[in-house]
Image 1 (cartoon, rainbow, N blue to C red):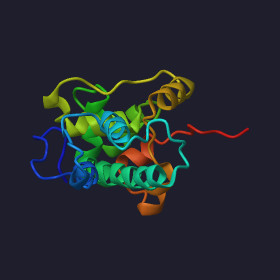
Image 2 (cartoon, helix red, strand yellow):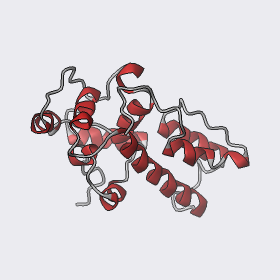
Image 3 (cartoon, rainbow, N blue to C red):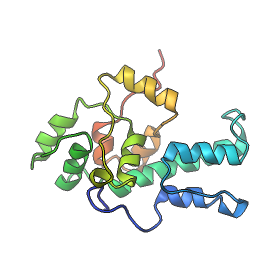
Length: 180
């Protein structure tokens, strides 16, 4: 597992692979771009920007993009039994000296609200060494508004299908699209 506290991976990441799959059509992928900005650039390149979300090519690409986000999350943030993974996530949200016990890390993270796409972007850019921390929201409502307005949507259903043993999936999944 590549950790954000280390150098960003030199090899192609799942998001890179997804975006590079459009290079044969002339799309130029910039790995330094955030995932959401890369998605927006791809949509603009493909002239999907004004297309509805049910436009078949856009919908198919969106599903592949979402699957790449899940793989990216697994690349940077490991298994629930790995204290290193828990400590990395604690550092991402600003805990400079994370505890050496998983239960204490869970307690720190339990009521923390972050956008998972932002967390992936933080890791992809080098984590702590890349500078900064992940933005923390005071409430789920604030996180929900930010997520919807920024289109930084993480596929909760895909992660749960995949295995659900990822640290991030255990502590940061929140109900964003709530039906009343």
